[in-house]
Image 1 (cartoon, one colour):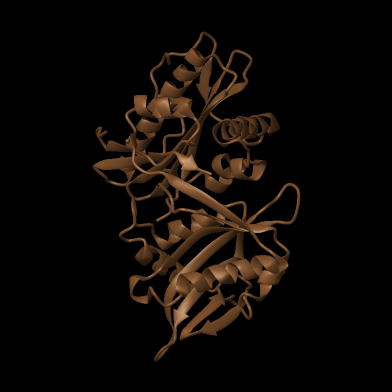
Image 2 (tube, rainbow, N blue to C red):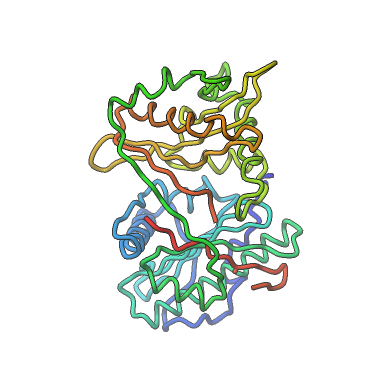
Length: 348
């Protein structure tokens, strides 16, 4: 469940040695989301990290605010390293993602001397491991896994992860395709259509305009069931699932679809697709497929293909430029203990 209060320790001084191995005058502290300079600097750091690792930047202010603002305070925590002028030169972020699984990202300014940068990285890793112990203990777990990642072409990040004891366990691909206006006809109507005993439909709305809870629960149950045997699957409660996806800056309820089998009797949910709006800086927006899952007993009936055709047709009808997808998400033991897993490098 979503806790009333964060499971993390908000004061970095409680987690780190009194004298972190940083240059004189450099300080470890927290982020102030009400200070534009802090937010802008984190955006700058993250965009620089993305550009160095994959050749282009996608981070924006809305995405950073999800990590550091009141939107995510119950499930996220952040720490920064500031130089003698008070400028943020390194940033660490942790996310209490699901029972036994904590996501971690850390970014260090590219222009910082490599020895200082490595020192910043070690401080952030120490903080993250301490946070893993905090959240694991709060959940009553003996072992808390930490997941993080790196881009393929980022040897600096790879070296830091290996030094910190993370194991490289998987590579992930990000894929995209253009959408043409003619593809709006891929399906009769993205709101609802049927083929070979399968109904594809948008998640319904309640009287107050919010999505129907029964449909949201059906999406959650399908995705939990579809990914039970998937690499690194961790059970996520319905409350955690909805809370997390609502925080996504591109979240739109009208980008959720269900596929239902209607052979005999009442419809039975068998597939689900959750997408977000992908904003383009130089043209129309697109759609981004966050999750696509089909239950094992419904595979081979064109459910996944039908859902993909639906989101593509919907993007074409909206005037979007393209659609993309990403794989579903993904360190040695210590006491609560922690397991490090390196879910990257990502390929683009």
